[in-house]
Each structure stands twice: as structure tokens, then as C-alpha cells.
Image (cartoon, rainbow, N blue to C red):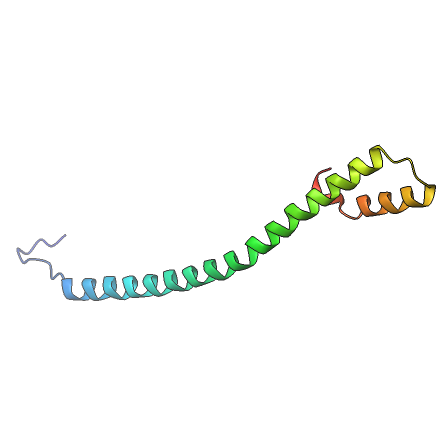
Length: 90
């Protein structure tokens, strides 16, 4: 607080310049994030699609195992196919 009666010197031009610089920097970063998001989206969709297909195949093989009436070798082959994707939730 100033007690000699003079007004404090406020430098609004400097403040506005810093604000403009911060806005420019954040806009640049936002642009980079938008590009990264687009790239990740291009990669995620095919991965999710492949996971859904694998889960359907695994469900099908599980059904085949449940009604299997063939040879022990074919059962073992089906079991191995089924066990290859333990992460799919079945």
C-alpha cells in the first residue's frame, strides 16, 4: 500500500501482453492435443473392433467345447483356441 498519496503504477500493457502470450501458447498446445487425439482415435477403433471379433470367436469356440462329441485331439485343439485369449472375460 502506498501512503504518500501517489497512485500505484499499473502496467496493463505488460499484463495484456503476458495474457496474449499465454493464450497463444495454450492454443498451440490445444492444437497439438487435437492432432494427437485424432491419431489415437485412428488406432483405437480398429483395435476395439478386433477385440470384439476375438471375443465373438472365443464365445463360439466355448459353445463348441460345451457340445463337443468328437475326438480327444479335436477337443484339445478347441481348448487351446479357447485358452489363447484369457483376457477376454470368458
